[in-house]
Amino acid sequence: MSLLTIMPSGKTITAGEGMTLLAAILAADEALTHKCNGNAACGTCHVYVQEGRKGLSRIAKEENEKLDAIVGVGSKSRLACQAKILGTEDIKVELLGFGSGF
Figure 1 (cartoon, rainbow, N blue to C red):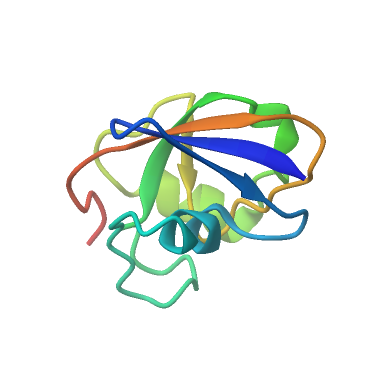
Figure 2 (figure 1 turned 135 degrees about the vertical axis):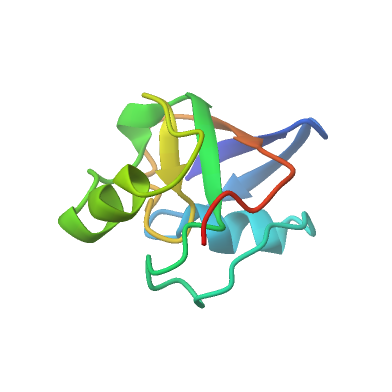
């Protein structure tokens, strides 16, 4: 289990191992656009992982390719639909407030 803090609201929830960030964020009743139903096809669930990046699964080829194609990507960027919680450390994510994908 990991504590997931969602910014800018500051809401903190317990997230189980194997959950995606998207599932955890939606379970916390936070709004996050996700047009492709978690298939790494649109990029609208782009978030910044401010803390705890090692507590998430590695970036796979599909996610990396989509991140390369969207605006506003940085070293802390992840697609919430693809980042799985490992349960090894607490995580802090920033919701960007806009769908940055296509």
